[in-house]
Length: 87
Image 1 (cartoon, rainbow, N blue to C red):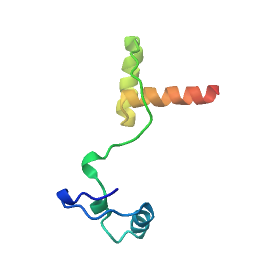
Image 2: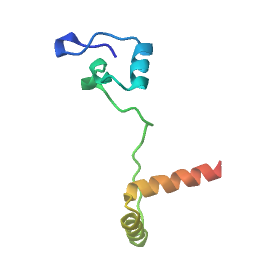
Image 3: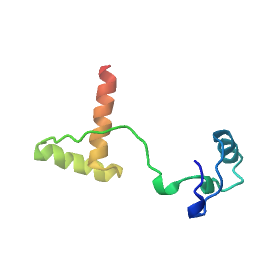
Image 4: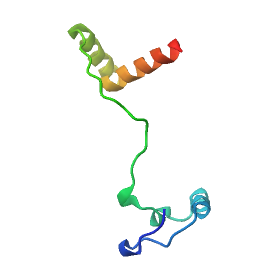
């Protein structure tokens, strides 16, 4: 969270100071962030290829259109629910 004076960023700030400024919400905290090197941290994923009967895929696409959810998100959610129920 330290600033980079070469890029016009603010001075370094402690974690506690950053948290306080964030919580108060009155100061633009982006001046203390290295946004050029920011990344989203989330769960690791693996890609899996699955062959589905055309009728099943067509039904998934229909559900996707009705719910506004991508086919991939539907499959992921349904598998997560099934795995959770099996535990």
